[in-house]
Every structure is written in structure tokens, then in C-alpha cells.
Image (cartoon, rainbow, N blue to C red):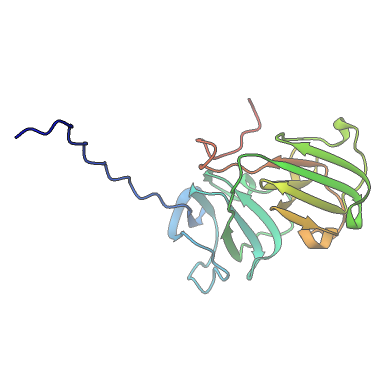
Length: 208
């Protein structure tokens, strides 16, 4: 006997999506031996990675560190291709990558406040849902000694135009520059870190 209510169509099984996936190639232009990461790796050498020549980020974002144990200079990687070293850094202080970890972006909104002096004192610049390639162009010419991130993830740069050393800012407070990995309180540009969860492209582009 036919039911008065139509039988609901079976639910289609959703494909399993890996939240984070990064592939390291030991040579430039995605050549040579490759190593896949889907979680943090505190010791690339212990994982069998002898050299980092190029990187392909399938799902991100990620932060790489100059040294093992997530220490030293920082390099932010969003979804995309990085065929050689100069595609992810121009600081040239080091050509070592010793560890990686994923960056968890849990907010669609972004707000960061950067302060001239330690412990959130002195002049400040507040940025909401925007990328700022030059603090000087916005009238802020002071040093950056402490930072408050109220939501979102950001990457600060030593020089204007997103150049120089990179500093990752996740939600929280950084009372002095050593807490965000800097030797000097110098940040002159900052941008939001994007993620596939909120942005389909999953990557930052400097041109509109």
C-alpha cells in the first residue's frame, strides 16, 4: 500500500575533506622526493625530509619555522604553489625549514590592535577586516612592541608591501615583541590569513 508521505531521498554521503594537507618536495618546481603532512611536524629531519625545495599546499593555512620545535623565523603558507624559496620569503636570513604546523582559522571576522610600547601602551593602530600594505600610509609611523588579536589570524611583516620577516598573530595577547618572535619591534604591514572554510580560494592575492 502506498504511503501518503513520500519516502525521503537517501542522503548523499559527503566526501571526506582533509582539513590540512601540505606536500614538501626536496627539489625546486615540485621535483624529487616528496613528503605529505596532514598534521604538525616538529622535526622535519626525523620525518625523513632532508631538504625543502618547493611546497604545495592543498589545504591550509600552515606556518613553517626555521628550526625544529616550531622555533626561529616564521613563514606563512596558504593554499597554493610555492615552487622555490623566493616564492614564500624574501628575508633571506635562512634557507632552513625545520618544522611545520597548521594554522586554525576559526573566525570569518578579523580584528587586530598594534601598540607602540610593551604591555599595550602608547600610540596604537586598530585594523578591522582589512589588509594594510603600509602603516605609514595610514599615518602610523611608530614601532610595534605589543599586539592584541581579538579575532581572526594575521601575519605581520617587517617592511611595507608584505616584505621582510613574517610574524604570525593568532587570537590572543602579545605583551612584547619577543612573544611574537621578533628581535626588534618593527612591523610595517599586516594582512589577514585566509582559509578554505571561509574563503573558497583559500589564498591571499595582492592584486584585485
